[in-house]
Amino acid sequence: MFRIIATNLLFIMRKIILRYFYLFCGIFFLGLGLVLFVLPIFPFLFFLISTFFFSRSSRKLKAIMLSNKIFGTTLRSIIVKQALPLQIKVFTFISANISLGIFFYLNETYYKLLNNYTISALILNIFIAVLPSYFEEQKE
Image (tube, rainbow, N blue to C red):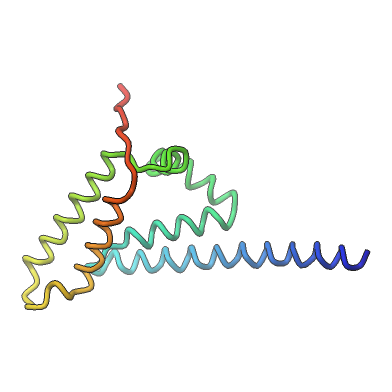
């Protein structure tokens, strides 16, 4: 009897600790994404990681993210269809490469390919290219 109670207590404690760990990681990656938003580095990946951790930490936070007016429909379609809408994929790809071009135009160093910004842009472009996509018809 004591063994069953102890096992259940350990399971509950583990669940609570894991929930706070996910919440801490979500806040950490969100903060990192906000800092990198100000610097000339892509914060996209860090925002994506933070949404993963926030959705794992609590059902309430997941519901808030899915009911968001701006990003909710996209997140729901990513969860249901496990693919990114083609319009968003193309927009992200074009805006990332335009910002990379602006950075190269304004940067005067000779070692542009070894720059952290270039590496993160390359990772983002590969990540977006590998993601499955679907065409989302516009509602009238």
